[in-house]
Every structure is written in C-alpha cells, then in structure tokens.
Length: 226
Image (cartoon, rainbow, N blue to C red; front, side, top):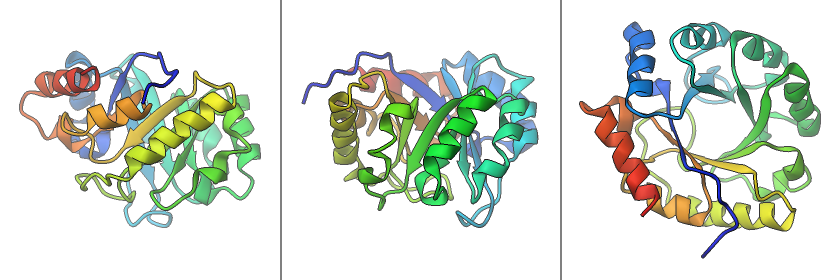
C-alpha cells in the first residue's frame, strides 16, 4: 500500500539498552553512528513493571548530544512531570493514552510547556482512543512489544495497526503526523513498518547491543528504504 507519508525516516536508538555506567559516551557513540533522535524510556514501576529514568537522565543526556530528545513516559499521572522533562531538555514528550483519562488536556500541557506532543498505544489499545485528538498530535507511537523491557520479540500485527493509523491520519488531513514504532525494530522488521506508514523507528538492543553500531543503524535505514 502506498501512503501519503513523505517524511524522511528517523532512527531513534533507545538508551534503555545502553550501558548506564557510560551513558554519555553511549549517546555520543549513537550520534556518531548515524542516529537521528535519542529515545528515552521513562518507567515508574507502576504503569510498567520496570523502573528507569526521570528528568535528571534527560538533563544528563542533553549535555552529551545535540540530537532531538524523544522522551517516552511510561508512567501513571504523567501530567505531574511534563514540565520537569521539558525543562530537562526533552524536545518531544510522549504519554500513554492508557495513563491519561484527560488526554486532550495533557497534550496541550506538553505543548504549552514548549515541547512537541505524542501519544503512545500499547499493543491491545485501539486506535479509537486517539481518533478525537489525532489532529492535535505531533507524533503517535505504536508499541510493537508490551512495554517495560528491552529485547522483546516484535508483535507482527502491529504492522496493520501502523497502516490503519496512517490511513486515519491521512483521512484527518494530518499527513505530516509522525508515526513512531517501538519494539523489536531491526533490519529484519524495519521495511514492513515503514511500508505501512511509520517514519520514526526506535531501536534499542539492536543498536546498543551491536559491536558495530554504525553498520546496524545503516542496515536499518537501508531496509527502511528498500
């Protein structure tokens, strides 16, 4: 299927899979290796069964890169922390639809704080949950694993969800919506999600687990353009 999406592909390595003891150097290495964005997975141990980064980590990463910082808040009550993440240097804040009963309010809170706004959907969550706010979004994130841990296997039916989301965005007159995919992204899975309409690919273990990160990022990019 051909989509109206014409935006260049962005590769966003997730620091969830980086060596935390060398985080600054890991981020620099990702940038040298051809990354476009840096993806920061904030987890609170409540919304997902893991505990990771807060605003201080964003501030630390910001000191080591000029790349666009993509903060994915896998936390309950994200509205309490939006301003802190933006002040720390996040360029885009993505919250989960499942964690936001007042989603429209949180989207505009993010924008008023000075960042771009995204909404993420877990594998089981229907696209209907963002249908009424899609024109307000800068990005929509489709999870192709269940969030909480890196290195999980790609959920194949996420590809069709990406395709339907791109159709929804086009029908809403929002062809410039970024569609991000997170979970199991590698050179083997990149082509299918990009053909479906994704333009931002989060890759964690595929990048930071590799000896030659430049080669891996290039392989993902080549597959995405194949």
